[in-house]
Amino acid sequence: MNVPSLLTMAVLVGWLATLITHAETDDVSLADFAIAVSGAALGGGLLAPLLGISPTGEFGLTLSGTLFSWGCATILLATVNLLRFGTLHRNRRAGATGPMGPLASPLPPGNSRWSIPP
Image (cartoon, rainbow, N blue to C red):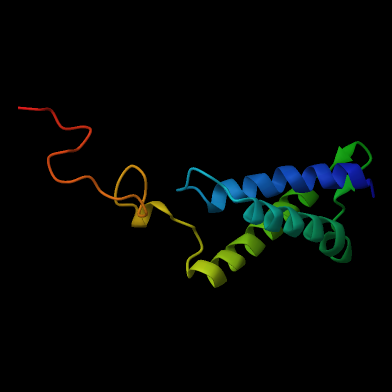
């Protein structure tokens, strides 16, 4: 097995898995990215050969190995999100109260930066 190509695939597939599971957020945390990359590497490096799926072929990566790694990364990240947040998708915008989020102090009524003075 070609280790650099497997690691490259794990990074790309892990990035794709974080984009899919965090579709409603603007940022992706480094911890979630690391979980997805490790899930892709473990899935493509350990589980795929045990199940008879070749992650790398004669001319590089195989489609079946890449899809299997992507599935493992997405399942692991969704499971971790389910345990941490109680939902498969992480949605930070649900609790946002304004343009700065829930921790920003709200402006008094009528003093909004978007209001037009009379």
